[in-house]
Length: 417
Image (cartoon, rainbow, N blue to C red; front, side, top):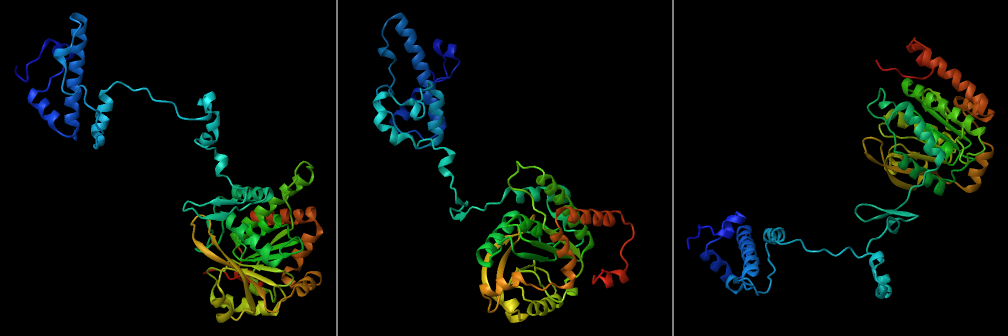
């Protein structure tokens, strides 16, 4: 019989049968490696099965159609393509359902403990205090208060993801919400940051750090000073919206975490202030500060009585280069918003500081004249502060005339040429 000759059964199946030589060769081989050989075996099995059925229907015997493959022990193929071809050619095998507690029989009640974790729930991976990073390291979970999140959402609606798009400045320091919360937690732990503290941000931008500590832990006085006019205006606009939210919360008894209001922004140059008094915490995102400013900040700090300073330069710069009278308390890594750039945050205390000295400063602190008006406004209450902020926003956002250089000089502001 010619290898290419078709039988009646093969004509019905429309399949070309392999030659006997190929069949004998495949029988003598130890294992099947290629998909072509697997396909040939599968076709032969289909032809044999069809002929067997017809022979059984007619004569009741199929001994003459036995192939060398019948009765052989199944062999595990090493080739993945060959295994896949055999699965496709063979009838679909019944697959057992996955083992879950719902499939257990009455006899398997004793094995429930062994199978109950086959399909773990997401709750098994949750931890109340820590979370796992992608590389397996466990870190503490950062918890942010609801009123703080509300304030950040208000600011985002007004200024976008990156506040003011870094308006008019190539270096615009804005920490992420989580990084700022890390700094706040560290200040609570090491510097007694609480509701009696007074906080200043040197170069406040649109005021996110000030608004953050106003909510958590709710400091007594939060002040930001910014010399770039556009950022100052955006900060005032954000403060106005936060004060409106604080007024709404004051009339709603159902809200537990109310938005607080003890914050004010100033437009000016920090070099116009002689000291940092009355602030207990002096905060500054110091990346990009020029040497001239560092020299003045060192002199102002050494003249002040403020107990704590928070910045983003290490002890070598502050103590060795600019002679700040400070001691390092703690440090933590932080990241900037949008760019993801990382910076180390440092917390310092004044040399020779004691708890008694801090308490005396909180109760009877002098106040530099640059900050007197802002402090008085915050202490006057929510409604007077809101009226002044609304008036200031109206003046700054409706004015068409730019500030002249003589006016800027009177306010201690340096305008770019």
